[in-house]
Image (cartoon, rainbow, N blue to C red; front, top):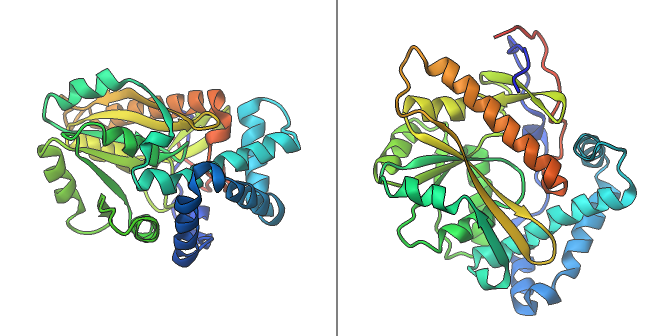
Length: 314
C-alpha cells in the first residue's frame, strides 16, 4: 500500500552504502575450500560461528534486525528468534558455496510460479525479475540452470557488482555470470539487448542509494522508501515484471517463488508514472506478505525504515 510521502531535496546516502563489508576474498576462498572438502553437513559448524559473531559483535545490525523482527512477528522477539534470524542468514551464505559450485543435488528446492515464468519465456521477449534481500538469490539461479534455454543477467549497482564478482572469484573462479553494472553509460543499452535476446534481467529493487527518486510505501505497517528506478526502467522498455525470491525453510529446503507484478507492454508516456507507482505498491505488498510468512529470511541489517527529511506528497 502506498503511503503519502516525499522525496528529500538533498537526501543523504543510504546507510548500507556507508557500512564496510565484512570478510575478504581470502577468507571466502578458505571457507569455500573447507566447505567443499568437508561437505555441507560436515562444515555447518561454520554457520554457528558466523551467526554467533553477528549476535555478539554487531550491535547496530542486531538492533535493526530486532526492530524488523518486531514488525514481522507482531511481538517482541526473544533471543532464540534473533539468533534464528542470524542463523538463517549464515546458512544462505554457507549454502552459496555449494550453489555457486552447482551442487544443487544437496538441496530440496520447490518452485511456485514456474509455469508463469515458462509462459513468459516462450514469448521470447524477455522480462524483468524484481527481487530483494529476502532469502537466497543463488537458489533462484540454481532453478534457472535447470532450463538450458534460460538466460539470466543481473543488473546491480557498481559497488554490488564488484563485490559479487569478488565473491564468485573466491568461491568458484570458473563461475561467469552475466552481470550488468548500473551507472555505466552503456548499461541501459546492454539491458535492452539482453531482453531483445529473450533473457530475463534480475534486479534487487529494495535498496536505495539515497540520491535517486523514491516512492513512499507501507511495509510491515511502517513507512518505508523504495527506489522508483528499477520499475521505471521496466516501464520505459515496456516489459513484464515478476517478483522473485528464494526462501530458506530449514534444513536443506528452499522455496522459490515467482509472481507477476506488472506488464508494461502497453504503457504509454502519459500512463507510465501511474503504472510505475501501482507496480511499486504491488511489489511492496508481495514483499510484506513474504516477510510475514517467512520472517527469518530478511537480510537488510540496517535502518530500512529510516525517514527521509523534507518529505512532500508525490
